[in-house]
Length: 185
Image (cartoon, rainbow, N blue to C red; front, side, top):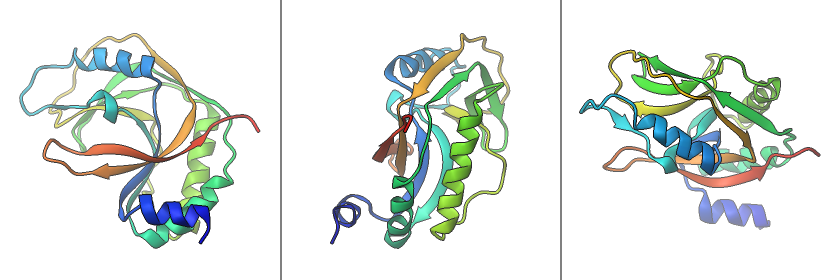
């Protein structure tokens, strides 16, 4: 059994997974200050600092076999550094979330998402067909639009993360289970 196969067997168990970028600590602290300015409505579920991330590709419920098919492909991925800037708070009515969104994202981000989607499909994983919209979820159970001016949140992604969503009594927790450096090759 290879080192990677041993790692998959011991760490990666079936569950809900997604690829993400994580803001650096400075950006996460800035985002927490933005979250504190959201309306104080009882049903609103605010994200914790540890849960802040930028989803790239939602993979859904994966089996061990799908993970075994996917991970070797990701090892071969080339990704240049990606700098993100989020400057708006948006309300998405269907999922009922407040999220940070951006007006313009680097082409490298869309290229990375496209590569990850192709790798997922090649591993037999069905993915969402809607167009990718860069965002960072701030709160769930949001019921109405808001207007909160913010300073832009900017960060350069240092690594690509495979994250697992784990249901808890306090809502989902997102755990980084694998990461790959983002750098110029």
